[in-house]
Image (tube, rainbow, N blue to C red; front, top):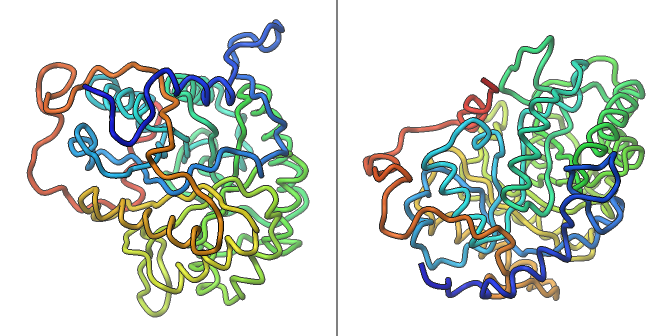
Length: 368
C-alpha cells in the first residue's frame, strides 16, 4: 500500500509519536510500562486531533481502502484483547495510518472488586501495540464479585465513592503512565447515598486523582432531560481545564425517557450544546463521533466529524485537517487494500449488517 493522501510519510510520524510517548523507563519499578513526557494534570496540552470517529467492525472493509478524511480513530480495547486474525490485522493497519486513542468499557473503576490485573495487563498491551495517545473509561462500575454486567452502572455521588475512585485511579496510574481520562456516563436512576451534585463529584474525583475528563456532551443532554437539570450550568460547573476529549453521539427520545443509543445523526440541540461547550472551555478539544446502533456507511459517520470540525473553526479556533495528522501507529499492517483477512479469507460477509445496540460491543468484551 502506498502513502495515504491524508497522512505524512513514515519519517514524519515518528516525531509526533516520540514527542508523546517514551517506551520503557530506566527505573526497575517502571520496567515495561509506558512513561508519558508531560504532567498528568496538563490535559489542556494533549494533542488537538480535530474530529475523529470510532473504529467499528462494520467499517473494516471500507477503511482498508478509504480516502475519506477520517482524521483519527478511537478504539474499544476490549474488542482486541481476545482476538487475533483479521480484527488484529485491521487494528494494526489502522494504527499505521491514523492516530489512535483508547476508550474502554470494562475497567470498572468504581467497583469494590480488586482492580483486575489481567484486564489491566491486556489493556496495556493494546495501548502499546497501537501507540495510543491516551486512554479513557467511564466513571462508573461494571462488575461486582467478579461478575461483569456489560452495562455502565452509576456510582453514588458520595465522599466515600469519590475517595474510593481516587485511590483506584492512582493505583492504575502506577501501572499505565499514559494520560487517563474519565467519562461522564448516561444514567437513568440515581444511586442512593449521594451527598453532592454530579459535577461536584467529578471535580472531587478528577482533582484528587489528577486525571483528565472525557466530556460526553450527548450524555449531558440525555441526563439533563431525564433528571431535569440545566445542561449548560452543569457543563460550567465541571473542571473544564481537565477536558482532553469530547464525545458526540445520537440518542432516542421516546417521550417519557431519552435513551443514549449512540445512533445518529446528531440532533441540532446537541450540536448547539457542543458549540456552547467549546466556547466554555475556551480552546479546541479532540472530538469523537460515536455511532454504534444501525451503523451507516463510513462516509455518513465522517460527515458528522466534518461538521464538528466546522463548528470549532467557526469559533475562531485552529484545528488540524486530516492531511496534517500523521499516524503515530507502528507500521505493523498485514492487510492490504483489496485483499482479504490474515488467513486469506474475507473478514465478514458483504450482506446487510445486523441491528446492533450500544452494548453489543461490550458483550464481546468479557475476558475469557
